[in-house]
Length: 356
Length: 276
Ligand SMILES: Nc1ncnc2c1ncn2[C@@H]1O[C@H](COP(=O)(O)OP(=O)(O)O)[C@@H](O)[C@H]1O
Ligand SMILES: [Mg+2]
Image 1 (cartoon, rainbow over the protein chains, first blue to last red):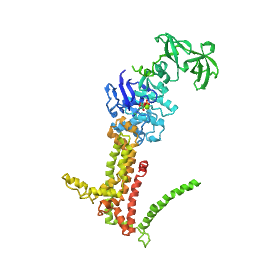
Image 2 (image 1 turned 135 degrees about the vertical axis):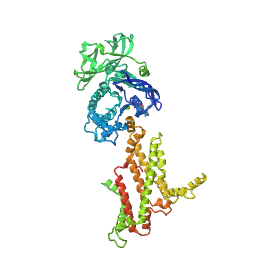
Image 3 (image 1 turned 90 degrees about the vertical axis):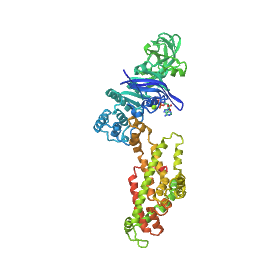
């Protein structure tokens, strides 16, 4: 598929502090790409460079094959949904939505039709005459989206659009966004620090840390095969344990040897072992070499969350089985659920080694 | 209970001030304005009707209105772009620069006027420079132009500050959103920045226009005593002991001011103004 947007070697610093370093990324047409990373890692800066609100110190931005690095924001065929919506307070909902169309001198009829269509699309039928101040966060959010999409941009940039909404509303809006993407055929570049949100809505996730890309992949691959400890830790709860790769398909951690499926790490090499909490299986103590004791138990609705102390490491375990605190257990993991990662030699390498 | 009492007492100087210098004079003006003379206290509308019919008064009213309108408009045209520039300054000590512009506000009024006179006068600094440059001297002193210049210089900070305040508070993301939606700088100004700054503009206009239309001191010093604004006539009437006619005219002027205030109140920027 065609690359709609491409960032080439973008570097940007503020007050000599490097925010993006040699940043490379492309987005294909009709893709839903999410930049995911902790707050302060440079996501907004990347989005602002694409929108034209910041100039990169080095590097280029290509859009539909053309270099737009120096193009003014109003000449770019993309629209942004800003983090705090940035609705115009002196205009009502309709006027906000019509803003871009009026600028482009569209006919009255066209604008009216578009407003109607957009209000329907974001489930705000009949709200056209409302003042934007009189609307809830979720409604303002949807007005902001309507205001952007009536311009039929090639690409929509969204900066943490759901961050200000409460949990339930945020989840509903996630499905709305997926529906919009499918109905409109617009390419989405989405920014969030919420990993669950990213996993739900994205075709492709770009995990970032401190201005560097850590991993790019589908939600499944990011979740199941994190490439380093940062990604594993950031995407969902996980147990990251020091281990030793004895030989191909055999790893030792917490003093016990486990079968696994990874090969090519060499023999007797120190590695990081990632275990997702839902992949840890608790059995009778005599059925496993690794033994532990339940030290805490919390009911989480779908499952129980337990801490299991095993050979000096506190394992996080999700299970539908309830085991009271103090229960002696054995710990098992299926070979394919053991994720092995190379240990970075130093912190710097951890960040830099993934920038290839 | 004790605290409440002492708080009330603390406010008493202001209450006395208000009664003595605002309420009582107002009542006096109303009484004088609607009575025949000091000795004959029967009700009459003659003071107001005569004041409105008198040709000298009408001329003075026209001139007051014209001069204050022109001063207000020029103040606005100068202050708005300056406020925009000040807001765009990338400096850390922005407020200090703004402060420099409003500093003249605290200069002694007479000193200010004398200085302006020294510049504008027939043999003043302005004409000295003009003749040195080989140009004809200008006859500005003692003309309406001098009054307008004086008003602009005197009232400029009152226009600048509310406008600057309101512009500096405009959320920058709104401007970015406008650009994002396809508006260039020009359209962004007229569709976003200007409408959002209107409360400040209205405050500024009120704060310049109201004192300008009731002014007499600037006109007296810079108009050479020859030009009569409404304020000068009222002052003269009172000096000559014509309290009733003077009050009648004062009431007409007050109506002007009240109408202006009524038109602008609610839309003006209260926060910005309060910084003055
Ligand atoms: N205009 C700016 N001036 C100075 N520093 C900035 C500016 N914008 C962003 N930064 C800094 O750049 C870093 C990345 O910010 P940002 O891109 O907003 O991160 P994110 O959106 O991932 O939270 C932060 O350390 C932030 O303080
Ligand atoms: Mg951000």
